[in-house]
Image (tube, rainbow, N blue to C red; front, side, top):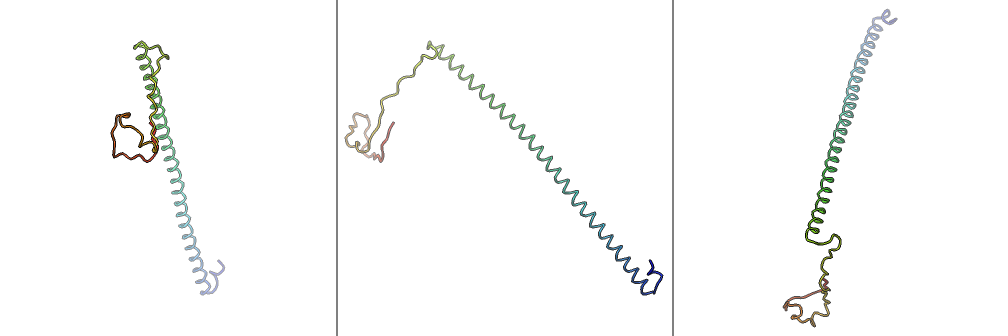
Length: 138
């Protein structure tokens, strides 16, 4: 202020300094506004991500509930299948639990070293071009 009452050169310098400071203030305010906008966008983005995560969580909960319903339905079908089979066995005259399946057939195993001594009539198969490279068990 006191410079505005002094020399003309000092007045010009003082006014230039004031204008420069005003421009600096305007640029600073502009920068602060832009930073505030960036910060606001960042906050909006975080909120949107939170909403998206909440939406995904709801979708996953729905999917989990759906899978649970399907599993229970499948379990129910398995139980019903077992009950049907038990009724079938009971209707055929088998006492439940006393039915025994037929015994498996005799063990058929062939050792590679025994290939030459096997009679084809014993197996009922004729295979002159068959080459076995390892032991086979059935």
